[in-house]
Structures are given as structure tokens and as C-alpha cells.
Image (cartoon, rainbow, N blue to C red):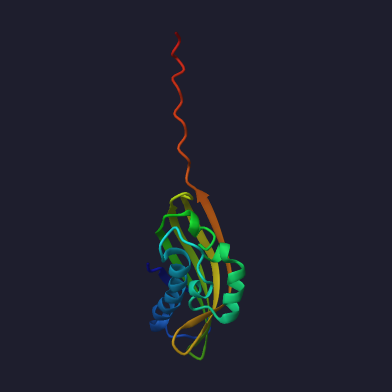
Length: 166
């Protein structure tokens, strides 16, 4: 799974030829979380340990996300599904830069996937991840994520013929 990542807003000075590279790097951190939290593993399964489903998150963000695992992962859904198929994944990046160096980013995420099994549905995860650059990557320090579930339509009973009179 790889998100489409794009730098859409820039505050400050940052070289144009590095725009896509920074968006790609932010997108990789987002993808690691989406993969670990919503896609990876065998289904159905018991809930995952919280540290394993929030890679790239700071310790404080892991603690916050663990309290909101219904929105931030498949932890409560995992026992009721057989599989996950990614439909779309997009990351728009707002970058804050100073003196041609990134100092912060907001990743605006939209992730859509479908589940199979007892809880067949289309899930949409969207919101923002607040990130700071590290020596080698980016770290999530805050977030505002929502999740919507649209259950698949249950098969309706076929109507009986109404014109049958005996």
C-alpha cells in the first residue's frame, strides 16, 4: 500500500526541487501507520498491542491514540472481519519551513478501505497528523482523526409474486 502524497501548502522558504521528496517522506510515515493500524495481519484476530499499531508516533501520541483506538485502528473491528482491501489513500502535506529546512508538517489524510466477513463495510479514515522532522524521518506528535463506517447492504428478501391468485 502506498498513498498518493503531495505538498499542497508551504509556509516559509523551502526549495521547490525538494517539495515532492518531503511529501513522499511524510507519506511514508503515514503509510506505516495506516498499514499497521488498519491493513496488516491476519483477520479475524484479537486486538493488537498499541505500540505495534502506531509506528512513527511519539510516546505521548501513542498514549493518546491508544485511548482512541476505535478511530485510530481496526483494534475493535478486527475480531469481526475476514480481510481488508484498500480502495484509496491520499496524503496532502502542509509544510512549515524556515531557512530552507522543514520544521513541521500537517499531513491531511484520506484513507478508504473495504472489509469482508461478519462486518462487511466501507471504512473512511480522515483527518490530520501533526508531525515534526527527526534526524532520519518524521514523527507524529498530535492528530485529529475521524472514521466513518458504511455497512454493506444486507441482501433483501426477494418479493413474492403479487399477482398469483388461486
